[in-house]
Amino acid sequence: MAKELDLKKFIRDIPDFPKKGIVFKDITPLLKDKNAFKASIDGLAKAFKDKKIDAVVAVESRGFIFGAALAHQLGVGFIPVRKKGKLPYKTKSVTYQLEYGTDTLEIHEDAVGPGVKVLIIDDVLATGGTLKGVADLLKVQKAEIVGVGFVIELGFLKGREKLAGLDVNALIRY
Ligand code: AMP
Image 1 (cartoon, rainbow, N blue to C red):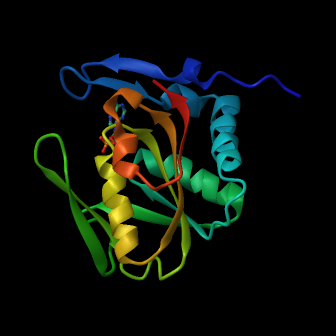
Image 2: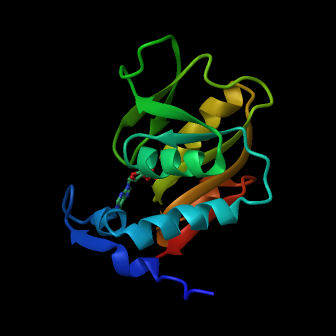
């Protein structure tokens, strides 16, 4: 069997982006490398291989890259969650707490129905606020969240604590 790739080698740290004190995890070197990008999608598919999944839900914008590729690989549909005002049809929204202030995410009101089994994907788990917002949105729609997958988890921010009760998997942990 081929030796597993160390995906950490394809993540670039950008200090003080987008503001001072944040070390931004740049995923573009991973996306550019055909083997690393494939390994990340394969890794996410493997993490949830025992689940029955009807659709992948992902958050704009970097979540779309991994979420759409994974949905294609799994042979399931893709459902976008977007920032306020971007989706064209009727929406349901959730407003969640950021470090300073709030943000609002939206999903089309007919995107998921009761009992639909969804896997939520995003690039980075930081404080968990965004993902908690998405999970709340899906719970209102009575969808069944079968798992939550990330490429990167910033463990020191303890985002997992906000996602208690959910099956959370990350490919890389800091
Ligand atoms: P949070 O709501 O704090 O878990 O933040 C999650 C979202 O912010 C993710 O969609 C990430 O794309 C982005 N994010 C937060 N922190 C970082 C970071 N250090 N590097 C890259 N992206 C980040």
